[in-house]
Length: 369
Image 1 (cartoon, rainbow, N blue to C red):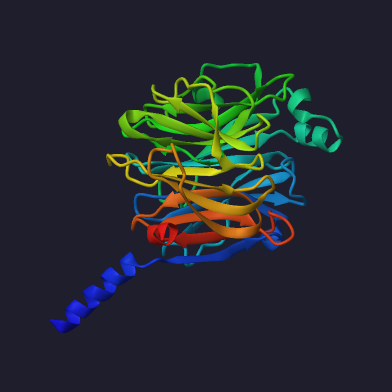
Image 2 (tube, rainbow, N blue to C red):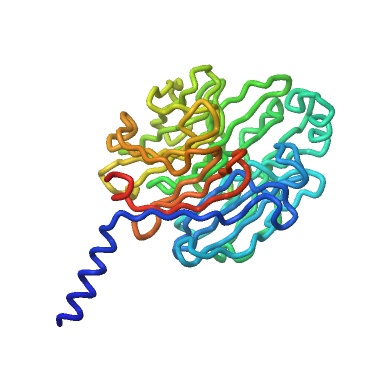
């Protein structure tokens, strides 16, 4: 009995302990890729960690030849599989990935943008591909129904997406993760640009039939992109977006109809940014009456100082913050693990922000103590 009591005491102690650990898992130059960028991190119904990355060849540029890759961990991020190519566009780039897990069907969706080789060559020639290209970035996807072990062939999303809008020539996702609402609706954060314009608009696509058909919601407003969405209480959604309004602050918008329409974005003075992607998730389960939110980004006017924040009041205030890395850092992806701990995958380096991908795992106690 004393032995059992001692084991239980040790277990309780470890669960309640303030825990933090991080380790570099990939760096530029490995596996024939110049850089690994734009991480997505998701947890499957079985508890498997699936990370989706973009492997850029020859250069770190957004208009490089890019493969979409996945790696998996079965032990909470202690060890990882080797990168697996899930979409190879040849001379085209498969970029801006966004991962979504359907809890009902156990299907993993990875959405991506196919960057045409014409647009890539235009960019190399010093022209603005986003203006000159007719089909600069088109929406594609792959799926897995076996916990990320194998993947479907890449397929164009256009046939499943309504309404069609030929004036949009630049379709981009997240990057990061999508969410499934308590209603079962699937939400994928996206942004677009129209032909002849370099102004971006944040919106979402949504599906109520587990991905057989998708619809485009209306835009939240101009000069925002690269956003994430979290479900608050009573089905209200909050969008947290990269902003080009010139204030180095994140833009926040609200939807009360499941992402179909959005309020005018407002700047959150507590969330400083260098105009960069950020990660934004709900800490509590969707069915919980408590709504705590997590936010992670380079908290600076430069891409540096990767900082995680906690809000206890649905994003009204952000009183808790901890720094993961003070040096150069950029894109990230947060996830809440099955055991209640928090994990993230993020870009960081010493001389520049895209040198390596780092996996961090920490407890709520570490964050709040």
